[in-house]
Amino acid sequence: MTSATPDAVEEFDIVVIGAGISGIGAATYFRRELPGKSLMVLEGRDNIGGTWDLFRYPGIRSDSDLHTFGYEFKPWRHENAIADAPLILDYLRETVDENALGGLIRTGHRVRRAEWSSTESKWTLTVATTDPATGSSITKSIKAGWVFAATGYYKYEEGYSPTFAGSEDFEGTLVHPQHWPEDLDYSGKKVVIIGSGATAVTMVPAMVKGPRAAAHVTMLQRTPTYIMPLPRVDRVALALTKLLGERRGYAATRFKNIWTEHLIVEGLRRFPKAGRALVRRENIKRLGKGFDVDKHFNPPYAPWDQRLCAAPDGDFFDAIKSGDASVVTESVARFSKRGVVLGSGEELAADIIVTATGLNLQLFDGMPIVVDGRQIDVVDTIAYRGTLLSGIPNWAMAIGYTTSSWTLKVSLLCRYFIDLVKHMDAHGYDTVVPVADPGMETRPVMDLQSGYAKRGERVLPRQGSVKPWRTMMSYPEDAKALRGPVSDENLAFGTRAAARRVAGKQAAHV
Image (cartoon, rainbow, N blue to C red; front, side, top):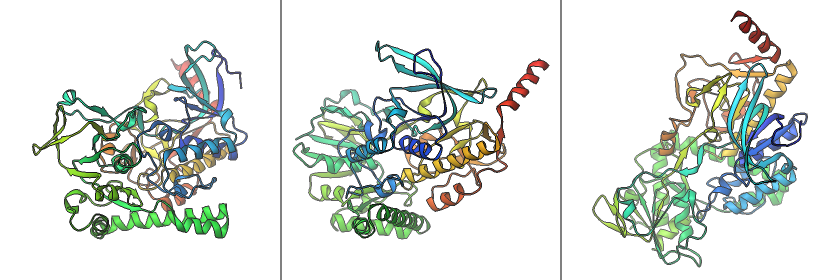
């Protein structure tokens, strides 16, 4: 491995792209299980943490319990099972320090292009960074035998915001949660949040409490969402930790929560009418019989066609019941000078409008991926076991669950990746690429009806209709499938020597 100079080309066995919760977890697994492999983590931003460092809007928190959202190898110690971003960031920084990952992570290193050479059996990554001596922008190349892309699936530069007529007329402050100004003062202001997803459900209670509380917050939604209260503190987890100790108590809590969540999701999907009735009863219990639950919390779709939103300790419902916040279910006709004009003609006055309208999806930070001179369109690829992509050698991606804790799936993918690398080493292989049946029926890899998922169909890979091409969203199913045999007839293994012989014959023929 060469020294880090602007002109030198460094080489690593594995390069992880992204230092968020997926990339930090992956680096920890790889360092422990593949100690003979050289490893580097490239992070385009100046800080680690990914999502948990990027988003700064009020109340930003997890939507899953940290006993399953956290890593299996590092117990979650805080009593809050649903945690705010600062606590999650502290957890990630502790993981980096405890596993000596600091020297492996390079922040401010954005991968702009990835090119695969079969004759070298390596990736050449074009990386944009800053010269520490001069402060000028430089571009350098890094070679890798494997790329593990832990980049998430949304665009960090901009969130999704539809065009609203008259937005230029609004005289107040217009902001998207993904670009929240740190100096934005909403104390005593009238706030309208457009949206009904997890971000809006998080912001409403956060903005009506504390010394900077808004005068009133209105959540303006076109379509209702299923919202369920969950305890912020898992009392059973605390009892298990006290009884069994930190590590065994954490493992027991993870087991409990994995299976509880699995049974709930499966139950709601198999019995949607009963699930809808259950959520409705809980909403009425929280808001009172005088509140029009059927208008504001009765989605036109079945539970888990889109992800349910969590309200820790029912904070969202408390904010509405107190009168400090309200819900309006109506379309937006246009913006006005003073706020939002609804489809009914009514005007909602606002000093601040928050467009909590979702994400722009983008895989691998939008970088071009080129294989032997041919640029690959990711949307034309099919995910193999949810991590490898057809037609792209030695490339793995980390996309977690949409119906459960993200990191549960990422941990399984990392373990499969480790087993695959060990299998290749044992058999003398340098390369592996999934080969899909061109006639196989496919569907979107993110099988949800949410707006962001539907928009993502244009940029995300596909999944097949049968295993191992089907991307599962069930931890028990995945645990069985990803811990099974490493290779099958869908994987084509190769060696660098064989690729060079083929290249030589092709050159001689020409």
